[in-house]
Length: 371
Image (cartoon, rainbow, N blue to C red; front, side, top):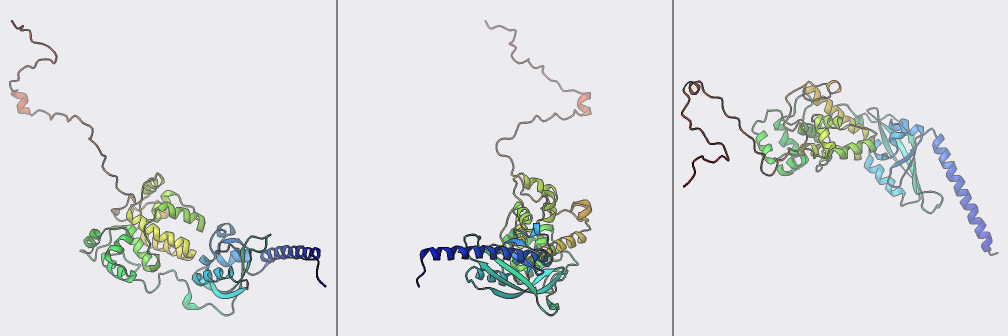
């Protein structure tokens, strides 16, 4: 027997009511689940996470919301690919990964599905939850405090000029492109390489080289420090003042005042900023903490206590780019005329003054009248 339009309409409304109730049950199950559960945007940004998820990633919910889930797992590229596939296929998918937490990798199995756009009462979103996988974590995947063994620059000595060319070859770059990456000129490159055992005079470039040695994929063009400041605030919940940002980039605090007033940073600072910006946006929080350790190691080598003095100048001699800002151009136009004071008279001149004709006062005419 054929169904009438009225019966079909009632069936559709009843189905929509069931979907609404099921969606509410999903929200309740996410909140009360003992396993980590996340609500994500279609591109993988965290909209909601339950208490177990906060424990899994080691972050407060206020700081985690707005960041990407892939920054807290070991194989972020594969997990991001899985999340993109969820929006295209209605079926649920499962895959293995590991949480990066407390200097360790904790294996887990992630499962996700997409709530499609066809549900008018719900915005498009991804639901992902995690379950622990049996067996201990692979000890070879442990996140160590020290840089990986394949790094070129030792951590117990300053960065020296003979470290330049091996790092350039590791990154697969020519001299000009490598100089552009570090924010230095080829003239500086060749000048430094005349003294291969000398420490680099630029602290910012030395920090940048250590960072690129650990993360070669960070090779990026320059960016401004204020971009990094905003990314740290939105992606990591780290709120830095301008002066703290300057110390983070290896320059003195006064450079931050210039950035806050619109002055451009120096080329080495822009180059390091670009790498750190990529690190914040695309790598995990543990990778950012690894740069903090590189920064502390650099301060220790220079005999500086940044936490106490808030300055780099208490250690070794300041680098040439310590100001962190581009040098000001000389003022254009004609300079103001200044009056040079006359030199003090010599003692002999005072004893025997020369014959000097008395000069006429300006504007006074001679008393002799013409005939």
